[in-house]
Amino acid sequence: MSADAGRPRYVAIITDGNGRWARRNGVSVAAGHNAGADTVKARLRDAVELGVRELTVYSFSTENWSRPAGEVSALMRMFNRRIKSETPELRDEGVRMRFIGRREGISPALARQMDWAQEQTAANERITLYVAFNYGGRAEILDAAKRFEGGGEDDFRALLYAPEMHDPDLIIRTSGEQRLSNYLLWQSAYSELFSVTSSGRTSRARPSRSRSPSTPGAGAATAAGSARTMASGQLRRRPPSARPRRPRPSASGRRSELRARVIVAIPALAVAALVIAQGGLLFAAALLILGWVCSTSSTA
Image 1 (cartoon, helix red, strand yellow):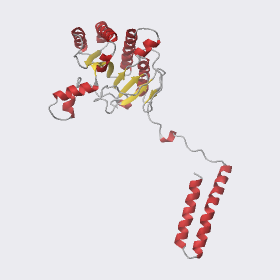
Image 2 (cartoon, helix red, strand yellow):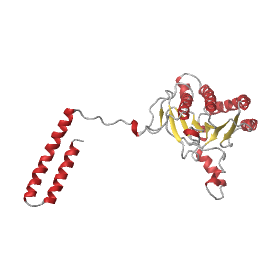
Image 3 (cartoon, one colour):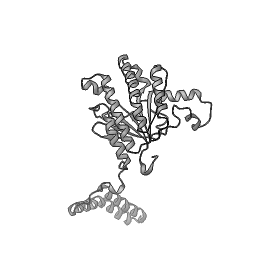
Image 4 (tube, one colour):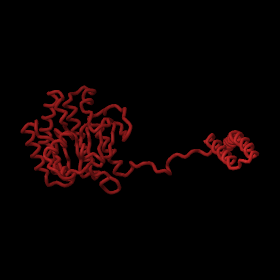
């Protein structure tokens, strides 16, 4: 972790589930995306409260262009409108905005809004909000590789969309799914991965079977709880002293164990006596040891 007491300071979120929420609640997909954007804005304020220095959100991927044309058009209008209306508020709250991703395919009007938002908030230092828009991790690496002329890792990193961006300590995905979906592939090499459901359940290893969030970006809402837990240092492995111990056997259990050991050891004792009568003391000792080991393993 990059901060004091293991608290994450650089967090990335893969928001998910807006379309599914919209279909389940009988509203348009555009309304689901708009409600999800409200949730992201609330999570930004939570991040400030938790002391997060950089928050990166996956807003629109290079693969999202394959969605229905009507949905894509509605998304572009929403982005244009929200950037224009919310940038002054974010500027006044000390948020610095940075858009990362390809500009090809974006309308000139929306590209100008993005540049304007970055200029308006460039001097802010309270928190940096990276918006991954028309972004793909493979595309970022490919675009950097095209301009790379040799050198080391730092030289290559300088060619990424936002070279100054820190690698995220924590990547949170909403709706319970466990995959990066082409997100921050270069930067996530050592990130902690969390899958969050609408119930607040978190997972790091096993696949989640939870349903998608009941509210748009609901997983993003509980992502704040996960980040809050991380901030308080509660997400740690259980110490050895806290692990369950094998219960001590009762008196009757100990007697049964002794009888089992004696029964298993009798054949070895008989053979050992026979070997001793023939003068093979060393071999007899080996047989006795073997009988003891067998009796011990039979009661374990």
